[in-house]
Length: 217
Image (tube, rainbow, N blue to C red):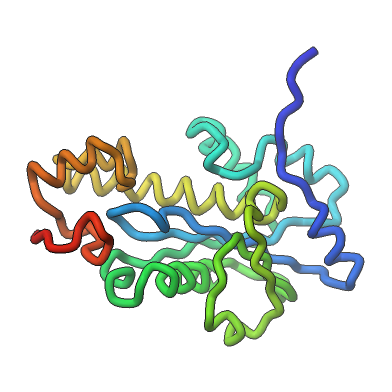
C-alpha cells in the first residue's frame, strides 16, 4: 500500500468558519534565525469552502519538513488555487535597525499588503510570532505555536516564504560567492562560520546577531 502523503489540516480554519469567519489569512516567515539575508514572509487565503482543498494541496505542510523539490512543485499549486497570496521581506539593514522580531512583523505586514485581495480578510492566523503592533493591522488575529504543522493556511504561507527566500539566497550567492549562501541559505552552519573567519562579513550579514558582533565588513 502506498504511503499516505502528509498534509497539514484545517481543524482551526473550520472552527473559525463555524464562528462566522470567511476570509482567513495564514501568515508565516522564513529566515528569522539566519545570520545573513532578508527575512521573508508569506500570506495566503485559501478557498476553505472547497471540499477538495486538502486533495488539491496534498503534501503541503511545514516547509521545513518538505524537500526542496516538493516545495518547488507545490508553490505553483498554492498560487493557482489560493484566493489571494503575497510575499514580503525585510532587509538585513532593517533587521539590524529594528531587531529581528519587529523586522519579521514588518515582512509579514508587507506580505499581507502584497496579496491581491478580491475579498477583505477578516482573520489572521500567524505562526508562533507575536507582533506588538499587529493591532494596527485592523484585523483580529491569533498566534499559533507550531501553526505550520497544524494549519494548511499557515503551511501554505510557509512554503511561499521559504521558496522565495531560498531563491533570494541563491541570487546572493552569485553576488557573494565566498560564503556558500546557495547551500546553507545564510544559516549558522560550520561552513558558514569558516567562511566568515576566512573572509569577514559581507553586506548582507546581520551584524547585530551574536556570531557577527565585533566583526567588520
